[in-house]
Image 1: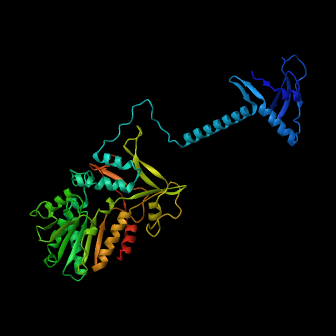
Image 2: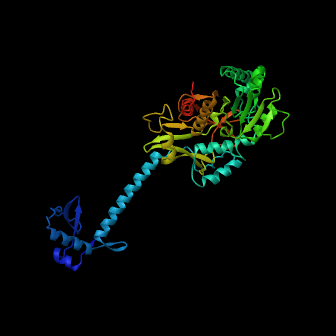
Image 3: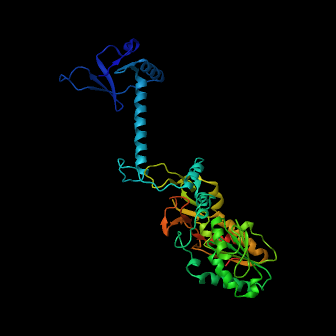
Length: 438
């Protein structure tokens, strides 16, 4: 039971009485503190109109009045403020809980069940964990490390081609593929006026099978054989050795240059296209068979804040199937502002929908621009054979292991990761290099 105890000064105002003053729905009621004895119902009292001075006096008196509670005495105004504060806090907590329930994805996982068995940890995963201590990384950085890390990358640590590897490419299926490419090179050499020197550059030669078939075709045209030199762009030491054995068995292991066994054509190896020498008097023929699909891509998702970048982060949740997970940047990144421009990405949506995705490959643009520049120096052409589209894709990243699709974040460094090629963007980049594209 709670009752008002008024200080002497307040008693002089309202007088001594055994009644309580209560306020209900902005109406004042005067009720008897005695038990109901059948007398008249409580009398309604209209709230008085107070002057400013009387209102100030009332507030002062209420501030000095005390309310007897289970915990002791409390100011009436303090008690009112405390009640309002608790109500507001309860409303805020209820709203937050409702929002969390609406935003949280539904789950059928029983908390009492043991954690999900995560995918196998790999040596590269430890490298990624150290890097992710600094914060989430772009998808492009993850793909680059997964494929090309010097010690634990996919292409730098294993044989990936053929039935014993993870996939088979067209040149491995039939020698006719590479031989027809070789016939095209002969035709192009003739169309260029049979120059005395011509340079053939292949990006990502794989096992060297296609180049072996190309040189077999060229070998049938003796007039061209003495004019040709070959430059192979390969970062994997293991694949370099495989290519050397396929093209020039008699050469020394690890040699940077060799002579083709059948034709004697000079073959050289380079770490990147930018390391291949350019000669103003030598036309260039550039071949790229399933090379650009391995170039890292950046992914973005359109939100109410604009284009946010998709990132890779550590997944510490016991419910996640992998040790890594995808997250979104809190807002548009610098990469989004630089890369997502219509002049760079033909076909980019002018009014993207909510949660619409798009992926681009600035690294592929850079290589295509260099290809265009080299072809424009002394003439020549580039033949790009790949799978993709004539425009950007929302999300085409995929992983392959043992000839089966896998999750791109599962067992990093042990799966091949690719993405569909945007040929329209490659064409735009090549034109910036002053080439003509068909």
